[in-house]
Length: 457
Image 1 (cartoon, rainbow, N blue to C red):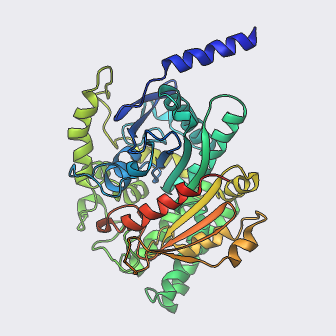
Image 2 (cartoon, one colour):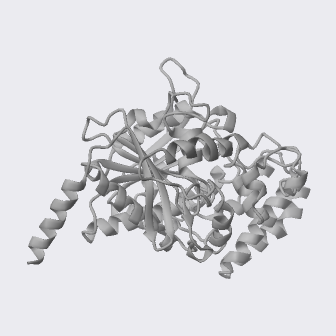
Image 3 (cartoon, rainbow, N blue to C red):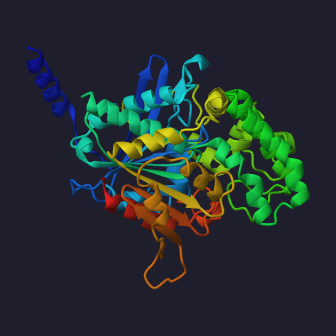
């Protein structure tokens, strides 16, 4: 009887599935009062059943995948509405953006108590959205699936991948996850806070006097982490960023280590001489949230999402963004609520995925990124205990040239088994983005293609 019921459920699901339109969007209510927004595009390779489903996860936490990742990095058009030559729709069967954690972008909660506070809660919400979306469209669940991410997205995605693999193994839904790609990712906060000062010292941005003066601030972060004082560790991390900004003439955390911004990073919005804070960012009461999320809330993007895009989305029959929901309006609260999660180390989760042998793990890194600097990434990777690590270290890296005939090295790559590492030579934090925000879109597009071509284990 149970077998018959299961067959009937599958039949209903199959009948309900529809061909993927050129684009679609919607809300998934992951818990009563918690509504996650998603946006999916049919890729140029949709006619090929083996063309992948590519997922993109933004960082922050609180930044919007459907806004920043979509219009400023890998979606089909940019903020001006112009086609993007390096859009990841060109190499995929489908491209999916999800505004998770709930409260990011157009996602929203009916009450602040419904915001997530742990990676487990984040992963549970994400799996619920994915189950919903995969069930809507014919054959989407059978496509090879790859999760790409950036920044704090790399803190969340290992947990997402684990949740998806567990759900599939338990028969909760069907998905064909082949790999994850952690881009400039906040996997271990303390690995980055421990390496910022020596990295800037090596680059002559700081000198020995600066290094000595900053060391107690670094130690305060490490101490809080070791003692499991997670909210305090996040606060101490903020203090360290402030101290480095004051000492290093506001070195840019995202665009490039060689770039400096006018006005102090901790400057209140009303005294924001650099013009970094949009209307949305200015409304964030928490100074840490305001500083970190300002990079994802340029005024032009805020105006686009809360103007023409909102109108376009609401034009879909049966879909409504509630009048009291503003794109990015709850982002600051998302960041603040996840303060207890922010500095936790998810290296063991990455390690477990490698040891499982079920998916490929890819890491890509902008050489000019400071917030998730290359030395910090290499430090947390040294804590991986997967059996292939020694062979990985001994593997010769190879150059990547972004275009035929262009011998200006765009990146270096090394692969052993199911682990790959890519070093983008002239990229900041937002590697797939335009050069205007510190990215190397042509090189990242080629890396994206290589990751997809490698497939699963």
